[in-house]
Length: 296
Image (cartoon, rainbow, N blue to C red):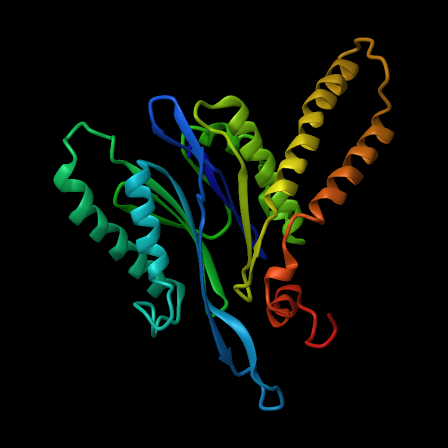
């Protein structure tokens, strides 16, 4: 896997990655590249008049790029922090979570990487994207060697397709304040461009979105993500025609307003089918959508 990214908006965390993994030589296969771990809990809502409700007390989505063996082990180590009443028991703030993540990354590198890594050897380098939520507080982290950086808003990408993926995003991501759909379309497009431009990016695009307030995850349908990528490929051709048009060149068969609306409607239709609502318990879907229980 050579492209993995996280998109953090005021309301949603979206993680995307390609699924291609090199085993050796020219042999490649498709594999699961995003780890999702969530711990459900019954908690009392604010106010004595409210009955207890389900919510995700802890949620983590971990992806990354680098040596496949080390990457799998490191993702598993981070994900295990969020299992049941494990190492994060008692953590109540992002600052505490940030500290635990830094300790976990440093411990992994000290025990498993540094003893086998030469001074000029980057073969064992692993970079992670971590989106996590604890008790309604959430953030994104990116790692580089044994360093960890917390991000509160924006886009982070790792892998050989990093620069291609990041270049596709609008400079003001703060404008994306609505549903997860807009951030997801941008994430799919970023992975699509990286797979097109960078070496060793490929196979299927995997995608998970997490509500920043409830911690409830949504898993994308891989076939629908592919359908979205195919539709977005037409944007490249259309954008080229528009550029020629505004440059004064004659371009046949272009109606800017009509074509843009048709393209947008098609993307919206596909994007609305992107996530598997049925895989999430009804109580979680209510929390994720903000709809009071009983109305879905």
